[in-house]
Length: 299
Image (spheres, rainbow, N blue to C red):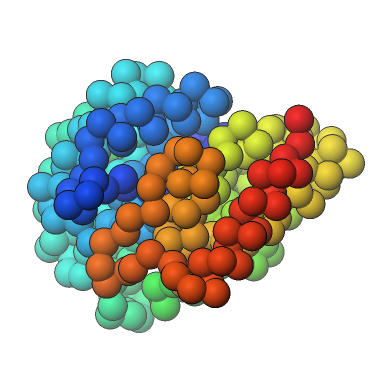
């Protein structure tokens, strides 16, 4: 993968589980093949939506290798690196590098919210541990660590294999803020589903998407319209899609998105504890929203 490949719709894929909550290898391979066939330009594994914290290291390696086999070289496969300690992250980055993955998505440490010096040391250690092209994942809402544009610029200046940023701060001004410091040195991809059109408007060139797991054709079309400046057409599709896209930005986003997949026949709502499937009024309301969207789905 080269820096120019960090663009388009790259699904942050869910991890399918069987009845025993083991990784469903066959379903995973089929899902990857379906997403690629719908026009997605890459596959991002082991992210938050993929329930990475609930996976063992052997499972993570298995998932990436399964995705690489399913992709068959058609699109890049990106693996997330998320751990509590820096030595764990470095070891995982090295193991993932040997799986055939084309790139890594690098996260700050879980749980501990380091200061600027600590965060940079962690991220630098992971970037130094691999020759693969890397994307930095900034999500202060979820992880409590905010990697500011100037910090991103410093990392880009000192690490030649840092080629992209998944920007999920919720502030689209960050996109132009990063560009003001690094220019075209980094590709910026939107990381929040309900900010994709706004992010493209200020310079994002790609989308690490969640609802794409159930609606890939609509996701690819929405990004195409936004990038080509077809404002009216993009606005119309976005208006239909937004109620679903907002499911990506709530604490139970994994449960919500897996339920959407189940409703459209592209997955199952099984999740690993401590997550549990939605139930009661919460599940009923989500089903109402999903079914309305399916019934009014644009041609």
